[in-house]
Length: 466
Image (cartoon, rainbow, N blue to C red; front, side, top):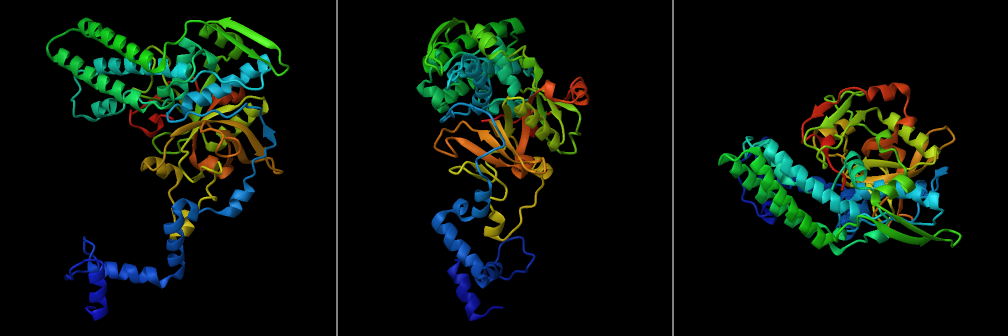
């Protein structure tokens, strides 16, 4: 209706009155007038607006009752040492893996705390990823440059992120060392610039290799070019991160103040003081989508870092199977590497991952009904961050109701850096756990013998933990 009141409202939103219908493809003045009237009619909306404008969406949709329920105490809790800090880098997958490994060193040497160098695997990962990228360029020389595959390969050739199998390949080849043997550098703690300049060179070299192919150079000639390129990558990494040691001497003291001195190579140190049989650890995923039936194994094309290493491999299982395996491993005294979508329904300061603790549905008076399957299919969610389970609370009914999480964001969030995850959040946003095959059923171990189904490079299960 073209009343004086409506004309006034149209002017207030800067619109010119025009003839329209309710089904108009554009937003009309009448529509916006109706939206505003509907909003003003509900006093709860005005109260929500006042709260969110002043305090922000996050603080305005916290459910404080749920934050009281999610206590940071657990019926099963492992001694994990002090929380680490990945700072301004995407090395969570390394930190989470090294956190599981350092617990073995601490136990064997009776240490209160220690860290394995996170700079050391970063060096080798950047080097190996650069080689991996250039090998993929050599394998795709005839692919159209404007095609989806080349867009994918060129998008982020040497990103910080990774997967468990990628880390296992690094450790098999290069071992691990105490942090004191290769401490953090400025650029290991803040990787943005290093990644930027490596990416710039890698894209340049991709162009040169493809141009060389067009000019008629054979594979041997192109690989000779690649060797000089890799020498430059090595130089850039040494300048940014320092040179990784071929051997080292590490000195420390145990809980009883007994002095310890260890001289070893990185491979010797891993074998003697970590002692994990890495091939015994497998990735279980929960991807409840129609294109990935449960009880099948999967891999992702072009996903990896070490040329000649083991391909990334997953066994897709119902979520309760992942929980059961994780609990069994922790009952045996071993923490669990896992991957999840950490940005969903989380409170960073409190260190809480809980669907019920963050209630945007109440704040906005609208439902957010997508299921885990739908979130994966429509790119709303995927695995983004790796952490470590170091405990679980088993309720009186024998079921888990919350999980203890060792994060790598420092001690100023959560309880000295340890987080709480509700069991419902585990079901909705945890996608992967890494489990020793000893804690799987015989039927599940047999499933691992299947030839993996190859997924497209851009499949959500090809995401990297940052």
